[in-house]
Image 1 (tube, rainbow, N blue to C red):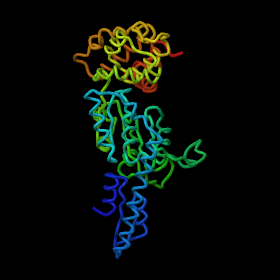
Image 2 (cartoon, rainbow, N blue to C red):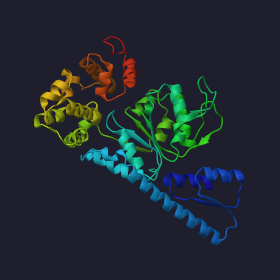
Image 3 (tube, helix red, strand yellow):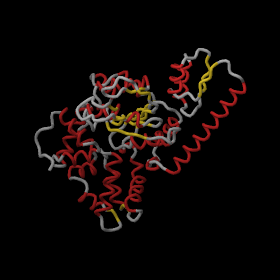
Image 4 (cartoon, rainbow, N blue to C red):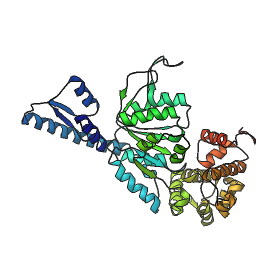
Length: 399
């Protein structure tokens, strides 16, 4: 390995570690490159002991001051990591991985259904890392068309396309020194995937319409609710990008797999929306605990918020949940369970998803915005799924 290779490895292992390069084969270009890659200092041989000791002392003092600054930033700007609630075995494993992963700069791939809290996990990793004093930037790759997404990610130069009236910094550059979350990374096109691969391999971006690469130092956290290995087999996701993203995989369990956390989450959301001024009755809690939560924690949060608003008394009752919140079809599922309703035996995951989309749309009278909210996904994601399954026609349109 060359000195620059070692520098890259050390920076990835611990971005706060000051790296001093001593070389007898110096050039202006190599010095500039080393400093751009994060080297603290660049010394030419021969080096006296006193000079080296002084540089080391200064580097260590600089590191101490940066750590103090990061601690102060965390104290002044608390993050959403406290929003993560649960004591079940599945979520406890996630908490343990967060603590371990936060100490590194390795790329993380979060797997989980919509609404399970992937962004909260990403923010918790950032908050506990050495990058906490820098920005946390997130983008939903499925919410933007390809051309706009490319500009948002990598930036563009003036005149590169109609409307590009000035240079624009991409979000990778905006997140310099911090953490960048790529949500719904499975929704990116092959062309975008090629550029993302370059960022992960070379740690540099090329703006749209530009020719000069820009070095970036960001920790990448990707998230998906799709089966990327299946998408690879279908030719819709690049395997080399998958291997680069999947350095440290973290699976976030759906709420139906950790129902013992529902009472804790309900109490948390009641405190959030009612300041502890309301409680959930035993029969209402039974309904909440018996429901399969296709929209996961996000759906539970929305339902508790609505219940707090709609219920005049101090108790959120089963009647208020049934009448005001759950559509008739989903009320049936809450009581009887979804397995028999959907007929899951012997069907593929795609067929199961298609059936559930249809069930939810029928339950909402084909109001797609309402269905997307129940499913815990963006309306644009729902539209793409309906097109893929040939279900975009028929039924009522949203008002």
